[in-house]
Length: 251
Ligand SMILES: Nc1ncnc2c1ncn2[C@@H]1O[C@H](COP(=O)(O)OP(=O)(O)OP(=O)(O)O)[C@@H](O)[C@H]1O
Ligand SMILES: [Mg+2]
Image (cartoon, rainbow, N blue to C red; front, top):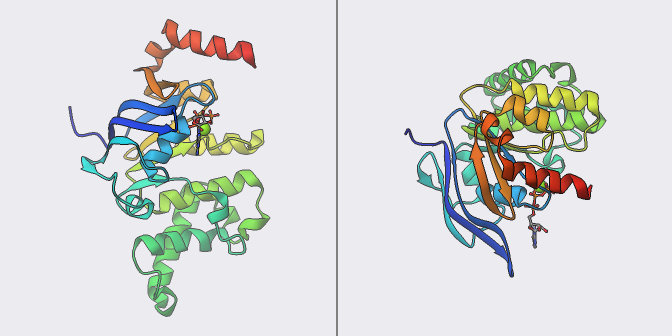
């Protein structure tokens, strides 16, 4: 098998006596469309936070393109190609969408410091940013200040910024959560149209979307992998059905 884009080996994390990541062996293949599902509190967000470096594992390894990144800062992981959506409060709310994405790309290219002194460089980066917004079909918002956009549109800007950093792996934790339906459809449409070469790991509760998007699905329960497989295998798995039917009864 070829080297995965991202891999965890025996990844563990405990909060006191509570094991929230329990020996997770996980592989995200290059260019994969992989969903991580499981009931509330299963440890999905924790798993993403361990990969991004927001949380330190109790033990285990995290490999990005075969290299151990467990000791690296969050920023260093982003530079190595680990993309994730940024929290909305990291956007520059007074700046336009285009300026936000331009700054992200400038930072990736390491020209952020001197960029405004070099008009040619600025134009090139802004053009790349604008082309990205066009590809994501949000160019109509390019010149609007982020703070004037509805919440769902701000989440699109977060994804644009993540993509502007040219990730090899993109981690999406419920990208459409809390977004009203018309806008959430735009977000999910964008997720479906992400460049094929990016490996995408998405956490999502909407099973219609999961089954439409994912080629592989990992089911996490109480911090451990219950089962992993193709959508057909997961749909047919009695243990998975039990977890979800059990959950639904408590809703
Ligand atoms: N900083 C923390 N300290 C203590 N416990 C935590 C911390 N963060 C998360 N937990 C616990 O870890 C468990 C897993 O939480 P996590 O947020 O990863 O679940 P999740 O699968 O993302 O759930 P959801 O689907 O609701 O988003 C939960 O029991 C949660 O209460
Ligand atoms: Mg979560």
